[in-house]
Each structure stands twice: as C-alpha cells, then as structure tokens.
Image (cartoon, rainbow, N blue to C red; front, side, top):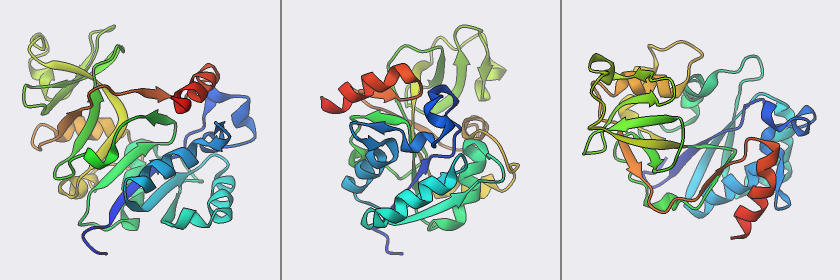
Length: 244
C-alpha cells in the first residue's frame, strides 16, 4: 500500500438500542437521515477527505450492512468488513480484531457511525495518537495538560477519575476538561500494545492506561458542530443538522 493511502474504520456494530423500534428490523448504521443511511453520510465524509480504505465492523443485522455496501459497489472504495457477528467486541476489541485488515505502518482514523459533524477530516494531524475533543457541556470529560497531552478522565457528577491522574485525584483543577467527539486517530505506535489486551474492551480504557507512557494528544476542534444520532428524538435534529 502506498504511503499516501489513508485508512479509516467505522464503528457500525452497535445494537442501537436507543433507536428502537427502528433497530428491531435494521442496524443503526442503516437508519436514514435526509434520505440516506447514517453509514452513507460517514462514508461520503471519509471519501471526500481522501480516505480510500475503510473497514466497517458489523454485528447487529450484519448481513444488511454487507448487502448495502455490495449493492453500492463499496462506493468506489476499498471497503472491508470486520465481522463481529459471534460477539460484540466493544470499541477496543473491535479495533484489535480489525487490525489485520489495515496497513500496519499507517494510522487509522476511527469514526462512530452515528456521529454527524462539521469537522474537516483533512485537517487532522496523524503523526501521533489523537482524540478529537471540544468544549461542550457533558458529565464525562477527558483531562489534558496545557500541551493537550491526555492525562485522564473524570465524571464530574460522581467525581470518578481514571488514568494516570488517579495518583493525584485531588488536584485536577489545573487540567483542561474537554469532551470526546467519538472521532480519533489510532497510531501505529500503539498497535503492539493492543496485543496484551483481551478480546473485548473499551478503547478509552486502553487510551487511559497507555497515556501514562505514550504520547496521546487531544485535538481541540474549534467551532465544532457535532450531533450524536443515538436516540429517536435526535433524528429530527439530524435532518436539520445536515441541511445547515
């Protein structure tokens, strides 16, 4: 694979329980917004940003996603399927299973299928692990130092803290609290570390452990408009979002 080829993974294996009853008969990835499935919107965004190889993980109604991609000739891209039909592997396990489908020398842009945003994917640095974050209100925040190096995670409602900062949990006031977008860059420098993790695990747990000894940066997206299309009441908002 030539060095210029950009590769990405779309998380599309989720059960979509918050989108019931729509997801009683279809995967979340094929729920339509503006006349097109969520999966279409993410693929088009990646394609326009120059991504040529895309891996889509599947579980819930996996066959429908496979058939949809086949019917559209993979949108002229090198699209590969990482099949999690037997067991949902969560986000970290999903990446670990999919790694053989990628060029091991290149970074992987990870994008949730239910995230719509105005983020310019061509602007993302890929020379190190990267978490796209922004200033917005939520209960759970990633914690960064002044150089936007990941230091930990906190739930401001419960006071829970994770990551290297747990050794000094009473002193997180100097750290920046930024909200994760569901978009990140997995870098080849971290691939070997995944081997020590189990088959099934959340990727954020991995990042929070790895950031103690490895550089994992935040990328603060200014003026980010982002919508998590996770519930039925967000579908109308999504229609409005894509029309702006």
